[in-house]
Image 1 (cartoon, rainbow, N blue to C red):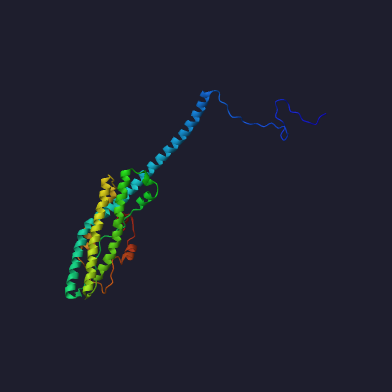
Image 2 (cartoon, one colour):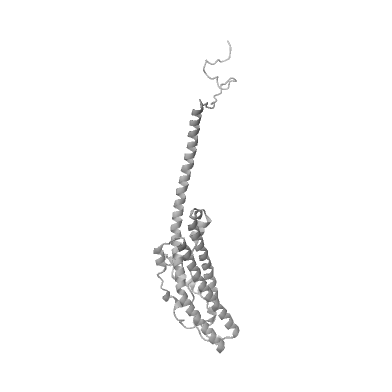
Length: 284
């Protein structure tokens, strides 16, 4: 009797046997062109549907991102546009103070002695925020804005960047002008030249800051870009006439020379923690 194990007809050979049957799925054959076209169409339709759904999700995603960015830009622009308006209004007081300082310098140059003088105070100093725009421009959101809208935002923030640079440089000039504050001292022609140059630079910066702020607003208006009017009004609550530079130089002159603008800023910041109201004004 043979030791071989025979498989019943129709049964697969035992596992491990040399004659083991292999189950291979043969490619499906199409019976005619019509069936092929049908199957091909189903596949193509499935791929196109998947791509369309992906594109739809992407479109909704960017619509949401752009809408949220517009809201944040609206608040940011409301703040800086209100600051620009305040700076332009503050220009009257700045020019008046510079005229006053020019008179002090002229008289001191004639007499050879600088009279006792209190601290002249300074124009308004702001933080000209642009974080929302920088984030949008640095990512992909700005690319999904309309061409005109993108141009309007871009131009406005370019002008505001110049305002920020000038506002910081302006304070350096006023640091020089603070050199007039003190108990009185001899004054020569070189002193007069130094302070006259500083007064001229201060006039330039004041005019430049005001003008660039106007240009920023014009850029937004030209492309129909608005901003949060409620935030704008909140920032404008500070009255220009209440600013120190709009008032006469008061208080006793410093006991010696070397006073500087902002010298009490650390103490003032600690005494008045920044909340929403101050943040809305740029923390000036």
